[in-house]
Image (cartoon, rainbow, N blue to C red):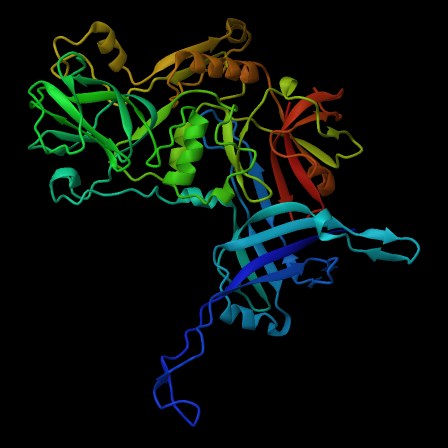
Length: 540
């Protein structure tokens, strides 16, 4: 007999005592109170859908009428964040208004909610069902709840997973327009640029047009090369300084001020053509991850201010999941949300950032089913109660015959004409004339076998090296350069908890291509409180 438990943290807000109390024999009239302020207090509500008492005799009353409706999935699109997250609503019964006092005095907005699942055990000797200990309950969901939504005889709470942190705009500083490093009136109100990792041909922001001062980032930056109109030999490096305005640079040179507060350059001569740089940006803390996934992890913690507790333990600071150098530059012209930043850095890598059942964020890479490893679950007719096909995205079915992965993204495209210095080298002109270079995987046999095979457009990535881009293109070819199928399989919820997204399984069912056991990968799961089964989507 299966059941679910709900634990919700709620807060009783701070109660402020009056500033003074009248005196009636115990204190002078108007004396300050000696009673301390009541601090904010945290409480935990415990409910269940079928009743539960833990090993410490703590009851979980059966007030839950709808536990959750959860969908988690990996991305199958080459350039997306991955997956849709539909968490649904938690509903509690409120018979005779027993919860009214909580609704009026407690706050639950954006506080933790934990849902776990367990199985009662039959005690044959006593002929009764017994509750398992709480440590044997399996996590189903961990996240946050939004504010109470009272009904006639119930109360609902909308649930949020850890990805809600990505909906907000990335915090940035803004130019005040008061002059010098605060920018002149031309940039007043504009976001300060941000550079993380390795980038190519970015245009720094001109913040002081009278003194030819440009800002590259809000943190430390190492400048690889500076160009004027694509020419790298015209303006020489004049050294680093601690005060950009103390001494003007010599004509034809530039000086650099770089610290945890930001990086600026000052030119000694007014440029004729546009100024661009190749550079490597670090975080304000001094952290300098090089791999794209490591840059993303630090960006979540430091730039998006994601609490470190939401980073899954399986995501170390230096991960070998995607050992590819790269980075990105946000020039401050637009606001950037966390989702946009994550999508930009993960684009084309085949990696999804998904919420785990324990409430953390973890990157998961889609793997070729044949090379995903030993299966963690075998899905046969003994477990499967229903199976149905799921349509693949039109970009993946029919199979793709060619994959083009971009690398060394050029942030400022400069084509031949008046914008280029006449001495700009031909190889530099060729580089900056296109926004991306492409690493290509192709299979002419697929093109010959299908009338209209898939041929996705070049994917812009944050990758810096050609070899890394070629490895990604080859990976796409191995996974999608053949006919794939998706199957939605309904299995008991207890069986579904044995696997997670990205895990390898074996599928054997009376459907085409799977009548004998074939390797597969779990792409998504759907759990509903109204059903005793979980729907797993399997890629084979």
